Length: 230
Image (cartoon, rainbow, N blue to C red):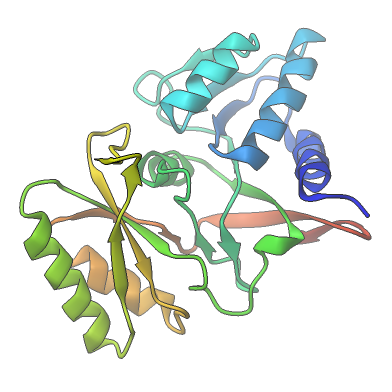
């Protein structure tokens, strides 16, 4: 039986088949994305020519450490492919992302790409999104008002909503863009599109971790091998 780490490594290596010489790559954040980064670094060392744009400071540092050429989205605003992980994936390739706190930059980079390829192990597959708490990136100003507005938006949709301010030790977690994160435990989200619109209508919400209509393909590593979802 392969453990979760082995499955992540397998998914990361499989993503290399989608990388072509000369590509402008969005490079994701998280443990599965890091498996891809290590595999990519080996190909770059062997002569593959790519330019990467990182979705987080953590990913940027790792890529540079491993010798992957990096640019910013300001210098390379249009990308060929983004490769990233996910916290949950439903049968329609709708995602929950942001467990690592990089959801805003991940979504900006994915939206700037011609295609988003998601890599994951089979534990991330769900029938209905929502068991994993949805990260919601918010502005620090008016945090309590935003908190209450998110609760009301959820209630209007008939959703239970337990909101928790993400912390790093005793201090609030601060994203790379200087915002806070509320983790919203809904239990299940039967209509992600309606929830997405409702959250975007809350002025203090910067972005949320529902990635809808962005993933073009998912490579899933399972105990019985790799499979593709499109």
